[in-house]
Length: 135
Image (cartoon, rainbow, N blue to C red):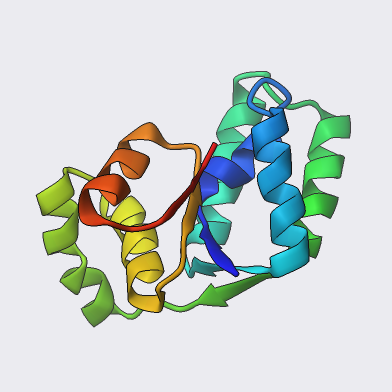
């Protein structure tokens, strides 16, 4: 099991971001299962919506993405206000958004690797000693 973030998830949905590496992470997720913080579904949905507005995803690809995403074996971990506020220091230390720091914190606290296609988040994980499954 590993933590999955929105950037890697969206790479599976947009043809121009898909690669052998991202597809390999998806195969691994389907075998091992994953975990994501409570904001992950909204972040992914928002990314799809903006991709749609920019013409990066058409109706057929949207349908495929919807089927894929609803069937992913990802456990959603709710994040309460106190936990979100606690992560602000981590975000400051690594110059991340709080959204990204929550992924990093979830991976670190559970001793899991983080799958991400986000270079800034991957660099922060390397600096903090959080294991990566980078795309």
